[in-house]
Length: 143
Image (cartoon, rainbow, N blue to C red):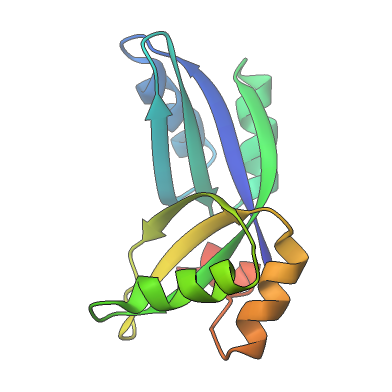
């Protein structure tokens, strides 16, 4: 139920993100979702890709500062308040959310959101007990 996210520390310089995507393209690694948080001098790029282990190795060999992080992919009802329902479940279990970002969902009426939370295993258990769809990694990599 845990999904591997690749995090890359990027200097905030012209062409740096382009260089990273060229490495992934050369290895035929497809990006499923991304998020960038930046400051004046650097940014942290978070990626969900179809081949996380290969992406990690190739980016590291290409000189990027890379790390793996376990996250969860949660199906959110795609209606007003759908995200609030999931956040209420996590808040009720006193599980803090470090960050989240959305993925495109192609085949059903659910939105898909990536969550990095504290107490990941407990968050998965609580969400499953409430009937929330927590996707397996292969489902996310194959989107």
